[in-house]
Length: 222
Length: 119
Ligand SMILES: Nc1nc2c(ncn2[C@@H]2O[C@H](COP(=O)(O)OP(=O)(O)O)[C@@H](O)[C@H]2O)c(=O)[nH]1
Ligand SMILES: [Mg+2]
Ligand SMILES: [Zn+2]
Image 1 (tube, rainbow over the protein chains, first blue to last red):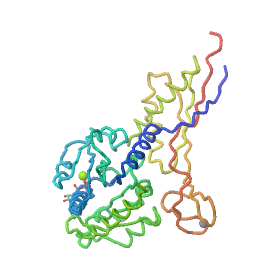
Image 2: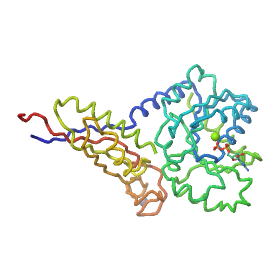
Image 3: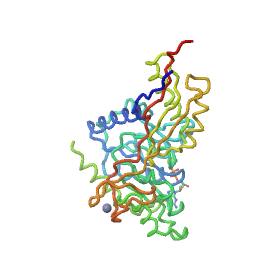
């Protein structure tokens, strides 16, 4: 009886990575800027996105959104009030969106007719960071009510982000939010990341965010 | 939190690969898991027993090698981080954003026992 080692060297998420690479090519070909929004439940992803979609549409941009939740289409209905095309993805217990779900829910949408596509991920600070959706920009959101040490507690997510958004700054003072500490912690985990401080309620910080989106879209080679 | 589905996908891949070795029994499955892979090693090991029960992999062992984060420092070259709480070069203290290792989640190899012995 002999024992031997068989080398496999196989990525466990290879299937997702391959699908995501296919999506990335499609987005590039269509010239649409795709963003993946990740945070805990209740951080304000949907509120931030409602405001973003509404303001982008007012400026003449063509936008659409996919939104993931375990159950209900409440968020899709909220986002659709902006007038943008929106589709809900119900994961029925799965804690993240994956590239296959995105592929299926894009069916019938003409990506070339879009300037921006936003994907609101399932509220979860752990699992979404492993699943590439082919997005150009991963946005990690953090609200002033969550504690300034969130980035240290969930480094995987903040470290894989391309931009960070602090939400609900309208209530920063009553919450005793320590702004400097939050900025320091984000920078410790993801040095040099762009950070936006926003309120979906008052609209604070939205102008800078929208300018960033326009710049990022302008950077695309097609 | 999706460790069970990860383990299920490992079981599928290993079962497929081992089909090329008729009669072989899998003894160990070796994984490489980066410190930023966002999976809990204990949870993988726990799920392994459940996921392999009643399959040809029942009784096999999951061996996980964890890999530290490696960043590229402009001054010091590739440097290994202590943990995942600070992305600064441990040698010179400069912030680093060029990551070289730490997100791996892969099956490195399997150890099999050939089934060729006389019955
Ligand atoms: N004060 C304040 N509350 C907000 C803001 N954004 C969201 N919220 C509230 O936070 C809660 C969760 O928001 P939601 O957008 O559903 O979060 P999601 O789970 O991340 O999509 C809701 O009660 C919102 O009204 C904000 O900018 N300021
Ligand atoms: Mg939501
Ligand atoms: Zn250095």
